Every structure is written in structure tokens, then in C-alpha cells.
Length: 319
Image (cartoon, rainbow, N blue to C red; front, side, top):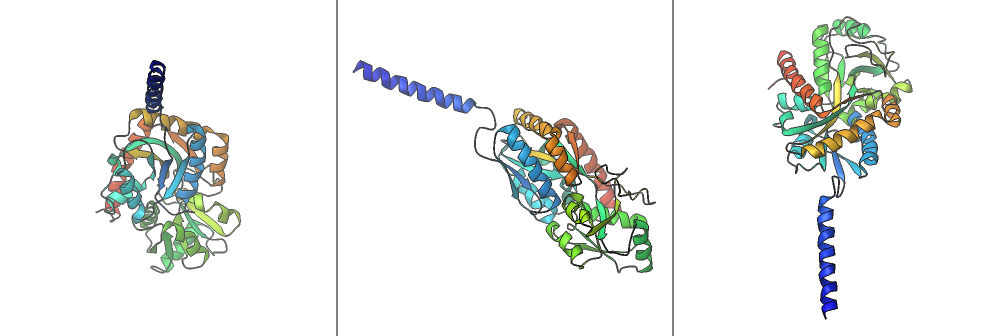
């Protein structure tokens, strides 16, 4: 009897000890890590997020999955993630849209609802036309728009989106009247290729294949200097129009996520961004690895949020 009791107590102790050890297993210790993408499958945000998720899965030894929650320029996804438990298992693939959705009145959630983890990529907003379009340069396009005010259509990823604001800023500086056509991000490319619009202002991640095949021509990049991933595309500044609105993408977590979890995610992302496969994949998508750690990323977001609010006020789309 004593032997049976001793064995029973030993078994209970072993189970209890195993339970304690399981609780002490460092993050990530359970389930999938989910990254919310604010735009549909096939968009620039989606394809770049999937590239990152592959690398993060390897670095963390956990399954990192992409969940698309599009709508309202990103507001739907931001609201969802901000409301989740701050434990590192639900993240958001954030961008400048955290500011544009808030200041345009589409969202009540601003950057202060999140913990910055790391900036990952930088992208150059580009003005694109069909490969057989008559416009060869941005100046050709602007000259035609001046001759035909209110006739040329320019698609973007939705009212209040970064691409919409970039387009409004460009054509305001150029002094021309064009028609803004706000599509969902997944509809922009088909709308141009199908001849439904004359041009589009878009991020290049979803355009690389079409540009490479000659189906699209890029007239200008809205960056301070030529993008190394697109060295043949002149900037708007080079062509006489002082507009620069570089986009970025990164990872953020709900406010209150433990610093230890943030640090582990930050380190994994840094290794991803430095990996040759990730660098090559980024080049293929016409985006640039642009890692920033959490503290620097947070400073960038706060600074750009204030600047974006002023710009949106000037161009008349700030609520």
C-alpha cells in the first residue's frame, strides 16, 4: 500500500512539475502567431507580409500566418488588432495608414493603441500607366492634364489611403485637375490593365510582374532619391515636382504587450530582414528592406503622424 501511495504521489508531483515547466516555456509557447494584413490578398501589403511571415516562422520556430482584414483604408484591421489580448499572438502589418485612417476620420484608433515592434520595408509610391500609353514621362502626363482638366482618371487604394493622399499631393503641387478613383487595393491593378482608368498611384509591390512584362510603365516615384530597387524610374522631384511621400511597413502589437515579447519579435524580424532570401525576395517585389528597432520605429511613427496631419490639413482631407 505504501508503495502504491508513494508511486501516486510521485506521479502527481511529476505532472505538477511538468505543468510548471510548460508555463515557463518562453514565447511563443502556443498556437499560431497571426499577422493581420489591412488589405486584400494580392495587394502590395499582402505579398510583402507573406514574405516576412515565412522568415519569422523559421526564426521563431512557430507558425506565423497571414489573415487579411481589409476595409476602410486599414481601419477595420487596426480596430481588430487593438482590441486583442496583448500577448504577442495577434500582430498587425502596419504602415503609414495608421495615420491616414485616423486623420481622415475613418478610424478612431491611432498609433498610440499599439506597441511598435520593428520597421521592415520601405516602398516608393509610383505613378503608373499602361505599357502602351502615350505618356512617356511625368511631364508628358502633367502637360496633357493641363490641356484636359478634369478628364484624366487616377486610381488609388481608397479614400484616405496613403496612395490617395500621395496622388492628391502630387497633382496639387503640379497644379492640375484630375479625377481621383478610389478602388479597393485589389482592384487597382485590374482597373488600369482593363482600361477602366488612365493611370494609378500605387505602391510597387504588386506591380513588379506587370512592369517586368511591359504591361505597365512607371512615370515617377515619390521619394527623395531614386529607389535602388527601381533605378530606372525617375523621382517626381527630378522632374520638377517637389513631392516625396515614401511609404513604410512594419510590425506592431496591441498596447501593453510585454517588453520581453516585443524584444523577441524584434530580434526575429531583424534576422529575417538580414537574410539573403528575404533581401532577394524584396528586390523581386520592388521594395527595400529598411529595418528599424522598436524604439526608433516608434519615434518615426510619432514624427510622421504629426507631419501627415499637417499635410492632410493642407490638402483638405483631414477631419
